[in-house]
Length: 128
Length: 236
Image 1 (cartoon, rainbow over the protein chains, first blue to last red):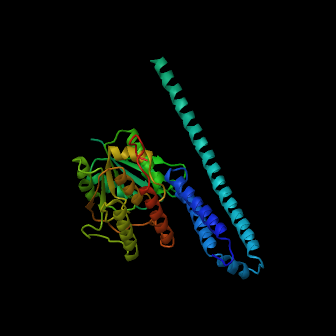
Image 2: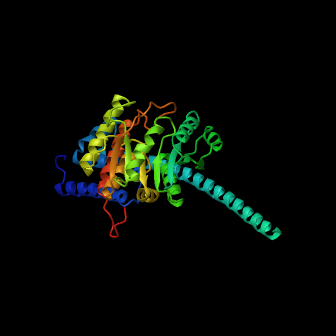
Image 3: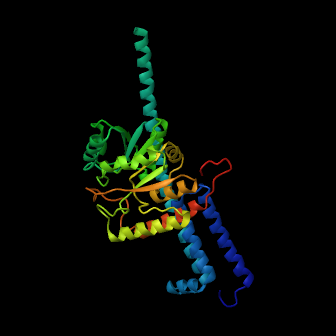
């Protein structure tokens, strides 16, 4: 905790982060979220937790990149991080739509094969 | 009794044929090769052999490929399914030993362990340490003793086939599936087997990603143990 930080704010932020982590873990538990994708959010939650209990990390980081006010550094980092996540999500989405297209084509071709076979079987029966 | 050997194969063109031929020499179980979107000649080679072949349209990873095999086993009413690697690591002569505990109904899942008798290829030191860690963690979480939780040489009965057809972990399924079964009250047992060094190809667990893999699987195990059976006693 940083000197002069409001103790209420401190506990409020910690609870927020903890609630976030509990929600993510519970989503994995009930199999609504794959662990693979949850890992990112878990690590984000842990990083947020560390920053809340030790805001000096943010002060250090902002000095490192030459930003005067740590809160501005938070905004920059957060925006950049969210940008990266959106790109990662769009990549995952693209690969998914490619896979759906492939599946649709495979199913359609299979269906065509099955129907062709059914017609052949029917014709053979008529000949018999 | 209908028995099926499931071989998940991803780019195994160098070993798959030899593996299948030795399997045929040892027993007359049906063999299913699940080709997990290989980009080499795996599919063409397997097509010429007297085995069932499922070609996945793209790479699903080991979990998705194995689950395809369990689904096939479930739909086709197999009593026993054996998981067997396509890379020459596993010994076909050990299959009868693994299957016998399933046949006499003293276990639901039998794992072939290379560490029980410490015979054959023992893997590298680093990997052995990782496996030991998972073994300890699983023991801590479930009280189940498993010396080789990452072993992909295993056999299971109909009950487990149906469970796996429904729910099977995706990325590194072997350790997690043990916790999943024990948590749902199924009997897991280990018997000693002799493994060979892989003939070719690469293990699905690479060195650089090892730490990430350990963290991820540990988390997966911890989260799985916190899951409970639902009200109807159906596995979750």
